[in-house]
Each structure stands twice: as C-alpha cells, then as structure tokens.
Image (tube, rainbow, N blue to C red):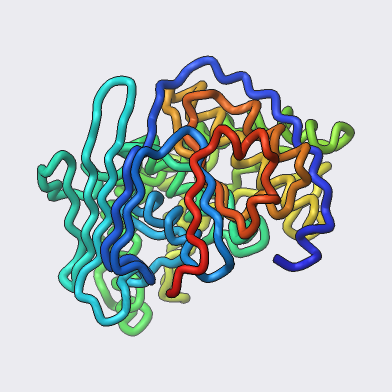
Length: 383
C-alpha cells in the first residue's frame, strides 16, 4: 500500500440503526484450482475472520471465492476464466452456509464449457436460481473506481447490487440488453441501407420503453434507499459536509408514453450514427459532495470516505429495508485505518454480520478484535 493511502486519517464512528436481519455465516470454504490454489480448505469460520500473510500469497483470492460463490462472477475481472488456475481445465468452490433458518451446501464449478452450479447437490440450470443465496458487500481500495471511472463502471455497480436483492431485475436487464443488441445490429443495417423497413425499430422501441421504464424505477428506488442513510453516515466523517447520490437517466420520472415519444424523437440521429443512444444503458449516478461531482472535485481522501459511506449504506439498506444480513468482505481496509477507528467499524456492526478481513500484518488490527477473531495465517505460502 502506497503512502498516499496511509496518510488519510479516517474518523470512522458509525452508528448503525440495525434492528433486523438473521445470522448468515460461511462456516466452511473449500477451493480447488482457484487462482493460485491447487487445494485449500478452512472450516469453523467465525463472526470475525482475519486472513493474514504477505502480499501475493492469495489473501484477496479467498475473499474473491466467497464473492464468486454468491454472485457467480469475480469482482476483479469481467472474464470468468481469470479464476482458473494455470493449466487446469476446471475450478471449484464449495461453501457450507449456515443461517438461523437452514444449512446449505453451495458449489460453483467453472469448466472450459462454462459454469455449473449446485445447491445441496441439486444442479441449478439457471444462474438466477443460484446467485445470492447469501449477500456480500465488498470494500477494497480498488472499489474507488466506482467514483473515479466511467458511467459504465457505476452502472455495473448498480446492476450487481440490485441483482442481489431483486431476482426480476436480472431478467429485465438481460432482456433489455438483448433488445439493445438487436436494435444496434439493425441500426447498422439501416446506416448502410436507408431503404430498410423501419417497422422493426418501432417494435423494438416499444419493448425498450416498457422494460427500460421498469429498470429505471427499480434503480431510482434503490438510490432513494441509499440516500436515506448515506448523508447521515458521511456526516460522521465530515460533520459540516453534505453527500447525496444523484441518479441520472433519460427515462427518469417519465411515463411510458413519454419514453416512447423520446425514442421516436431520437430515431433519426440514431440511424445516422448506427447506434442506440437513448435508454437506461446510458444511465449514471453522481456522488455530489457539497453540491459538486466528487469524481472531478473531491480529493482521493474524500473519495475514500464517500466509498466507505456508500458501502455502509448498502449494509443498512440490505438489513433494514430487505431484512437480509450480508457478509462483509474487507480487503486490506485496516492498513488504511488507525487502531481506534478499526474498532469503531466492527463494534458498531450487528452481531449477526460475518466479516472477513485481509491484512499483511496482524499488528495492524486492534488486539481486542484479534482476540475474538478466527485467524487464518497464510504465512509464506508459495504461489
């Protein structure tokens, strides 16, 4: 970790209003051919789990495997096959999950032919039937890209968050993406041949309006829920500052008929470009710090506080609005916090929240936390 990350003192004093949620623990994790692991197994996992070891031994890979078994995708890449160990033709993650209600055995296998998923040894034909058996919230320094990078990165963040809490959203998004692909393909043909029949575009636009309207409203509702908490949480860091998330969409607060008119109005321009420029695939969210876009006007230290506030707001929304207890994955967070502020995070979490922490040095973590944690020491494991 560079000095520029260590230099910011973050006064974390969360005051969670968590009243709901049941216990959701990963009790056992087993990896085969995952990243640099040939075989790896840990069991008897506790509420707080600290994974220690030098850089490069695979600490983050353990968090990644927990994430993958929840969402059937990596947080480090859009390429599913990055998790596949070199020269191997499959990778497997097995998790024993325990809740107040039931116990589950979850299995994710990636082969050269694709993904295979099981719950309690029952094969799931659809990924949507597999994902989010447990919810995860990830904090990693790399997550700053949500604030720093393009609207596509922020839409991806929204899609992942919503896929955990709304199964219908996944189908809506898949259907919408197919429509946009079909429309783009046809617009390219129209661009080459202006005599093409435009009735097909009319049919596509009707469906884009209908599905886009639903997606827009789901996103709007989720942003509103985050905003219920994020302002209060951010003021724990900067008491005189304001933070709000602004949702930007061409479909926002429009009726379906108005959306259809907008698509019709922009048709000629899209035909000239050979590309669909109107729709929720152009959405963005903006983090407004004291009224200014944090991407352009806030320091990296402030952006880090915004990211922490966002993640803690996710936690509040999941528990208080959806009655779900997520698993918290903290990748190298404590190398950036002083000993007092580390304790402020964990002591204010609901006791039912399971936490996984990675660190290069156990001395970075307050002793009172270490005493009640399960320590997973990777030592000098050769990778």
